[in-house]
Image 1 (cartoon, rainbow, N blue to C red):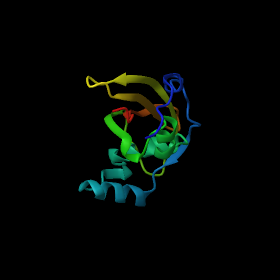
Image 2 (image 1 turned 90 degrees about the vertical axis):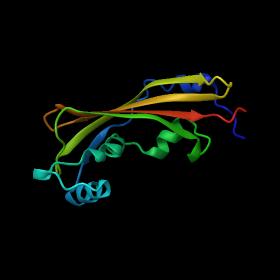
Image 3 (image 1 turned 135 degrees about the vertical axis):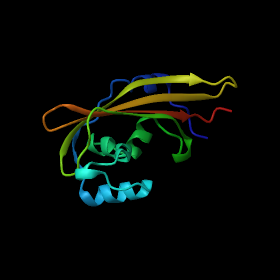
Image 4 (image 1 turned 120 degrees about the vertical axis):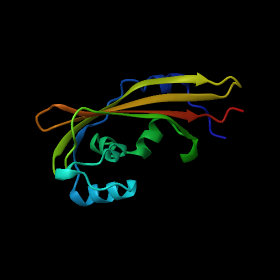
Length: 149
């Protein structure tokens, strides 16, 4: 059994900003991602929205592994997904260098009716065009389950 991180360590994560950076979707990447969905390529080099699973995370200078570590996940299996919310304000295109920013907007300790604890972290990433227009926002909410029972 892993020790439960102090609540203060978790709540202190709110406001944590990722380094940020750039991300460009290559044509081959769009072909593979689109193929995985069973869809046809979108016209004019438009990127399939499924890219929002990884584009914001990688572009913000982080990784799933770092996100697990920040919340002190007990194991890869201890993360429960509450939601992935994608907001598209404009189309994404291949070969465009998007600027990505990201942060943890909320971090809190929660308990279930049976007394089991979990930590709820909300990550938010924003994707900007080269002209600095907001193109997309992803909000990812994970529960970091704690082995308390």
